[in-house]
Amino acid sequence: MQTGGWKMRRFAIAVAWSTVCLNTAPRNARCAELKPETVAAFNLYVQVSEAQMDADIRAGRFLLVDSLPEAQRQQAYAQLQHGDLYIKPQRTLQAGRAIRVPSGLIHHWAGAIFIRGATLKQVNSVLKDFDNAPNIFKPELQQFRVLGRDGEGLKAFIRVYYKSIITVTYNVLLDLHEAQVENNRILTRCYSTRVAQVHDPAGREEHELPVGKDYGFMWRLYTCWHLEGKDGGVYVEIEAVSLSRGIPAVFAPLVKPLTESIPRNILTDLLTDTRMAVRSAGAEYPSVIDYGLSGQHKASLSAIVTSVLEGGRVLDMSGGVE
Image 1 (cartoon, helix red, strand yellow):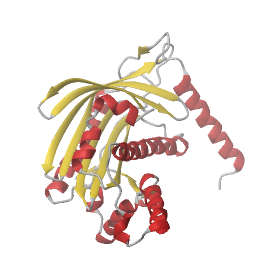
Image 2 (image 1 turned 30 degrees about the vertical axis):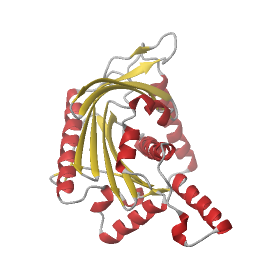
Image 3 (image 1 turned 180 degrees about the vertical axis):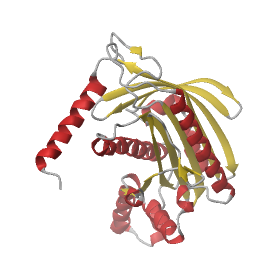
Image 4 (image 1 turned 90 degrees about the horizontal axis):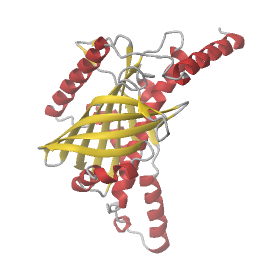
């Protein structure tokens, strides 16, 4: 058993390492450098993940929860319809084996939310309101500019901001591709083509750090949005895969929980912000008339429904994942 003193020393070492790597001025030192083999491994991971996703869709499993065993699937749908979020870490295997990522770390998460009373057209319209996107997804999304369109695809520039122990800002170029899988299903995939960390954003010394030669919190980003209209509303699912610098083994027990909490929190914000934006755009809550109530009881139930739908809990399903 570890003593309290040893735990404190480990914590002090981790803090010292984090301070050096996260706060050293980039002009004087580089904490990490993106290597070609790291990029190749990430690209392979995304390709294998998409192949498995496409196979699931062909088999009728459009949402993540559709791949769960029947009892768990029913429970997850019930939780989503109750207003909760479903968020779960993912791991893609190739031929049953983990995909090795030299000098890097892949963060793979998926989350879903149910927007009762909304239509597929309403939700997709909100998500394609790019001019308003920074207002919907603030403060993380600070800018969104469409650079060009090509059929169902487009190229875009975004500036994203993340704050945890430290604050980082990135300029990101994206390729977005949308496909109408069926009348009630839409799939949109987003690929980062350039990620640059910004030094002193909005300050006098604002400039981009050399691409791939920065703090290494986010080198690549892939997201896939699933929209499915059914059950009197729309299910919104986001699957996100990002690439960051690796974590030295000695620091992994202390640093890894932070690297896991950040993508989970980002997914939570994206999903809840989407639901709030759709509500603001005019999606209707279910009528309480169906419950056979009136007067004060109807008003009370309406308040409960509103509270549940807009302030649902996060259903954290990470406990059973290694």
